[in-house]
Image (cartoon, rainbow, N blue to C red):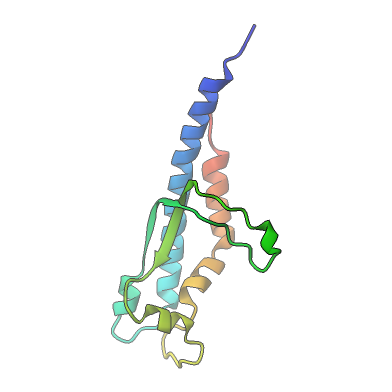
Length: 134
């Protein structure tokens, strides 16, 4: 008796790719919604410009958050990513402006939108990827 693993593996990889895309999309929506609530508002242009995009991007290097530089793994593969941000020229200034006195919202709105939802994002990925059946 034998079991053909390769066809099941290909099927699993395809399902994993689809569920990863869906999980990134859901995560993008969650962070976008949260970040918009935290965004400084004058006329609303910055808040309305925040959005997300899911797609494949060529990843050149992994982030290592202050670890040993020798631990950086170079990688030229394409990976699914979600990017949350704004195309408004002054978005970076408002995001990084810790010294600014915002009457509504505050600085680091994108980062806080992400950090406030890490548990929720983890649950999204667990549900999506943990639920794959082959």
